[in-house]
Image 1 (cartoon, rainbow, N blue to C red):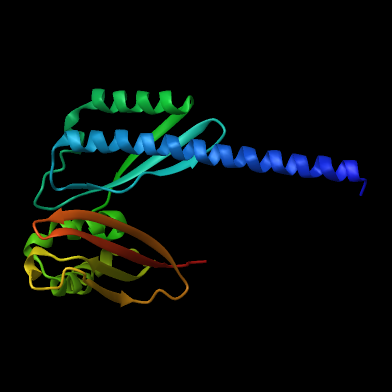
Image 2 (cartoon, rainbow, N blue to C red):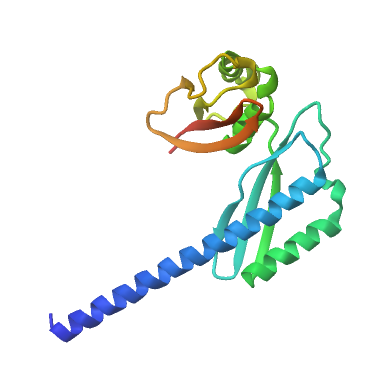
Length: 216
C-alpha cells in the first residue's frame, strides 16, 4: 500500500471513529436530559404506587423512539393519565426540542413488577419496611408462580441481591450483602438493574437480574 494512501486510510478511520464517539456521547447527554424530564413528569403525578422503568431509546435518521414501562399496584389506581394530555404534549415538545427531530414517546403498562428489572428493584425497595430478605426470597418463588400462566415463556430465572440493612433486620451488620437466585442464567439474556435508597439505618441497594431464555 502506498504510504500516503495508508496515511489517508488511517486518517479516515480515525475521523470515522471520532464521529461515532461524538454521536454516542451526544446521545448519552441527551438521554440523561430526557430521563430527568420524564422522571419529573412521573413525580408530578404524585402516585406512590406508580413505578417506572428507565427509558429505552431507538434511533433512526429521522426519528427517536422513547419507550417507558410502568407498573401500578393492584391496590393503587392507575392515575397515569390524570395529568391530562396537555402535560404529555408539553413533555413531548420538550423532547422534540432536545433532539431536533420527530420523537415517539410510548408509555406501556406492565401488570407484574418482575417483568422489568428496574421496576422490580424499586418494588422490593418500597416494600422493604415490612419485609425481611427471607420474604424477598419467597416473593420470587411464590408471586410469579401464582401467575405462571401469565408469565412470558422467555423468563427462566430471577436473582436478587441486597446490600445494606433493611429496617426489619436492624441486628444485621452494617456491611452486609445477601443474594438469592431462582432459576438458571445459563444461555440467557439478562435484564439487570439496581436501585439505591435510604432508611433510618442508612443506605441500601437492591440489585435485580431477570434471566430470559433466547428463543430462536
